[in-house]
Image 1 (cartoon, each protein chain N blue to C red):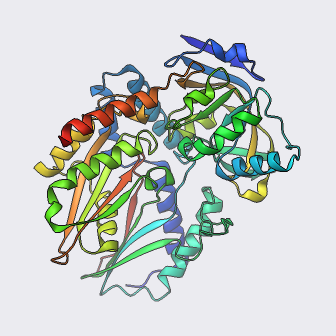
Image 2 (cartoon, chains in turn brown, green):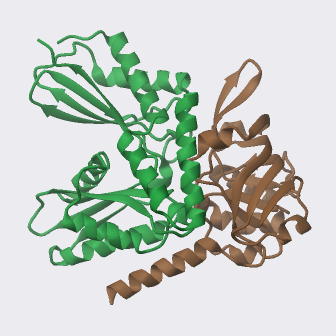
Image 3 (tube, helix red, strand yellow):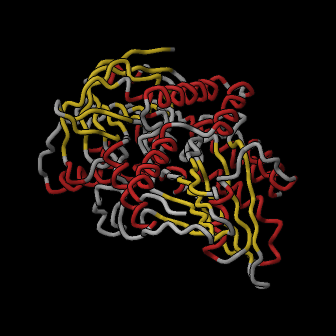
Amino acid sequence: MEYHLQTPLKKEDIKKLNVGDIVYISGEVLTARDEAHSRILELDETGEKLPFSLKGAVIYHCGPLMQQTENGWKVISAGPTTSGRMSKMTHSLLKAHEVRVIIGKGGMECIASEMKNRCVYLAYTGGCAALASKLIQEVKTVHWFDLGMPEAVWVLRVEDFGPLIVGIDSNGNDIFGKVRERAEKVLENRKR
Amino acid sequence: MKINPNNFIWSIVNLLRKAEIELPEDVKSALIRAETIEENQVAKSQLQAILKNIELAKNHGIPMCQDTGIMIFFVELGTEFHPGFDLEAAIKEAVILATAEIPLRPNAVNPLTRQNSGDNTGIGIPDINWKLVPGNQLKITAAPKGAGSENMSALHMFNPKEIEHIPNFVLETVVNAGGMPCPPLMIGVGIGGSFDAAARLAKEALLEPLYTPMNSFEEEILEAVNALGIGCMGLGGSITALAVHVKTAYCHTASLPVAINIQCWANRHASVVFGGEE
């Protein structure tokens, strides 16, 4: 199935998605990777308010390559980064915030049960940064630039951002986990 | 042979530009072949996106991946080539210029404070590997390396009696990596040398052209890797790696160092040669 979704997202928007479905997203997407995740969790702990809302949000695991121009920031290249690094922090993130979609590459370990009824993981082809940059219409703003260009939180306006493949759905299914299990079995058989 | 330092710096900027924007022909051909062979429809769609991305990057002159890597250079300096200026300083200056001009994402950070230098330089970066060779030429290869695949690399000091474990070590590394290093991969394996020399061999193996025929050991590992079914981006499929290249060096009679350097599909590198006339 193919779906076109508009942000901010509601639970109903993502509940219908199944692993293997194709999704396109329009609206607002926030980039966040290692440093942004740890800062979000730090602020959550001290009870401080975030400078952006994560309600119904789409988090994009991406450290874009940006260029400052007379008219503000311009996206040069903006593909996904390895989501696996954020697996642990995502557990806490999903508990505290109503993030509905995570976009990234490579999948995330031990997260499918955490995502149940809450969030979906959408895979964008790793390394396809030139392609992705053409789907980003505007850089709305940037938060936490002190973390450096790749680690800052960039608020992007996208239109039909995709094709994204549902890698982990909200029913606990995980393509990456399945592929991994199979690979482990092949390796085990070989070692026998 | 003397060269003008300013021209040299701009040649290096252009070398980095080429490496970041245009994938070497052999890598591109291997990806095209992979797309033709792959029967898993999801994996096929991912390979098609990669091929589209490669064209787009080239046509628009933009880096193919936002992770423009850490700056790694392999320099072969002819003993009869006398530049007359500080080559290392000039390469560093070229990296700073390239970061602003191409542009490149500033990726170099202090390993402990994680403070970003903002210009892709810092202690030990760019990483320049020097080799003295006979002759009057200077060959420089730029091989920027992204973190996604570099992070999935591994090194193990084996017992000398464990030679037969080497293929499984490669397979374990690939299984642990799953879709994270952006397969289809190229796998560089360094066997022998010392702790650090093995890693360097593995990295050099990634520069081997993909049309270089693989020996039976490499073929066997590649076949086993592809039988894992990880596929493009870890979404399943028959092509997880495009090539396995092994490089060896003599090692201590009591050791067997083995290093595996994982490379994503974007095996970016480009070379330039100075001098050679007269």
